[in-house]
Amino acid sequence: MMKAARYRAYDETVDLTRFKELLLRSCGHSFENEREQALFSGVSRRMEARGLGEEYDAYLFLLLRDADELLRLTELLTVNETYFFREPDHLNFMVETLIPALISVRRTQPVRIVSAGCSTGEEPYSIAIMLRERFGSECERLFAITGVDIDSAAIGVARQGVYGSTSFRAMDQALLNRYFVQQEPGRFKVTDTVSKLVHFEMVNLLGTSYPSCMQAPDIILYRNVSIYFPGQVQRDIFGRLADLLVDGGCLLVGASETIHHDVGILSLVKQNALFFYRKTPPLIFEERRTLSRHGSTPERLQSGSVKKTSAQRPVALHQAAAERPRTPSNATPVPDIKVCFDEAVALAHNNEHDRSLVLLDDIISRDNGFEKAYSLKGSLLLGMGRFDEARSVCEGILGRDPLCLEAYLMLGMIARQYGDNDDAFKRFREALYLSPTCWLANFYSGEILYAQQAWKRARGSFESALKILESGSLKAHGQTFFPLTFNAEQFVIICRHKLSLLATQK
Image (cartoon, rainbow, N blue to C red):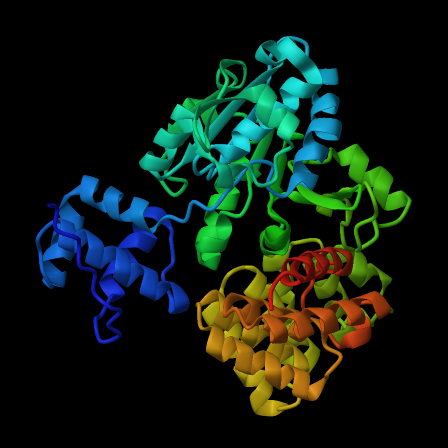
C-alpha cells in the first residue's frame, strides 16, 4: 500500500524570505501576506517529495541549481481556476466588434490572437468556438490563436483538450454537444474542428524572450493573471505585452484589473460600456497642430474615444513666458509660481511626468509651503512606480498638514504595492475619518476586505463607493490631483462587478 504524504501545518516561524525573492525574480509571483501560507504548503510538499525533511536551506540550494525543480514548485503554486466562457462580455465584444473590424482591413494575413496566462486552455478554446460559430470553416484561414502559460502541466491539459464538468459551468449545452465528445462520464474532449485552431506553448511572461507564435498579435487577452504579481512586475509584463502588439492592436484585461494598467503605456478605450487598451500610433506633427487649433481633448474618456495623450500638448515654457507681462529689459524675468504650477498640471495630464517633476521641484525650491505642488509630486512619483520617494513626500506633507486627505490615500496605495494590506487598510480608514464621502478610500477598503473574505464589510464598502461615484465627479470628493488618470465610469463598472460577485456570498 502506498504511504500517504504527510504535509506540515503552516509554521509562521519558518523564514520564507529567500524563497519569495527567488520566485519573484524567476516568475514574477508574489507570496506576501495571505499567499505566504500557500508558499509554505508548496515548499513543504516538494521537500517531502525530495526526501529533504525540514532542511529548508538544502531545498533552497536545490532550487538555485536545478531549473526543473524550480519549475515543479512554480507549477504547484500556480492557480489554475478557469472555465469556458468566463467573463463573456469581453469575449463577445472581441468576436462581434473588434475582429470584424480587423478582418475588414486584412487581405492575406490571419488575425493573430494570444491568450497570455491561458492556464488549462479554456479561454483560447472558448475563442475558437465563438469564431467557429460566427465564421465557420473560414476560421482556419482567418485566425491564428495561441495560448501560453508558465505551468507545463496546465499546458499539457490544454493540448489534450479533455475537461471535467466544472469547466463547463457557463457553457450552453448546445455548444457542448457540438464541439465536445464524451470520453467517459463527466469527461469531454474538444473536437478537432476546434483544437486545430489553437496552438499552445509553455512561456514565462517574465522570461528573457517570447516565442515567435506570440509576435505581432492583433489581440492579446491578459485576463485575471496580473492579480498574482506585485505592482512593478505588473507594469513590466504589461509593457512587454504592449510592445508585442501591432499598431492598432488591442489588449484585454479582467474587469477588476483595468485600473492597475492605466499607466500611460497604451490608450484606454471605452466602447459599448467596456474598457480595453489599444496601441495607438504616434500622431504626426500636422495632427497635433490641427488638434491644438481646435482645443485640447477632454480629460475624461468619452464613449468610443481614445485617450490620445500626444494630442493634449500643454503650453510650452517659452509660450507661457510670452504670455506673461513684460518686465524691464534690465530685470531677470521670474515665472509666476501659479503659471508654473498650471503648466506642471498640464504636463502631468499629458503623461510628461519627468518634465512636470522638474517644474514642481523648481516651485518647491521657491516656495516650500506650496502644498499643492507636494501633492501633485507625490501623485506623479506613485504613478511612476517610485514608491519610496512618493512615501517620503507624503510623510512630509502629513508632517506639515496632518489633515491632508490625498497624503493618506497615496500612503494607502503605496502600502498595497508593497503587499502590506494591514497598513493600507489603516491609511484608507484614516482617509475616511477625514472624509466619509471619499470614494477611493471606500473602494480600496472593499478590495482589501474582499481579499480577506470579509464579505459583508466588503459589500458595504463597495456599495458606499458606488453610491458616491454615481452622485458626482472625482474632484467633488477631495481628490484634486490624485489620482490623475482614474476614471469614475471605470470604477462604477468595477464596483458593480464586485457587488454581483458578492451577491452569492453570505
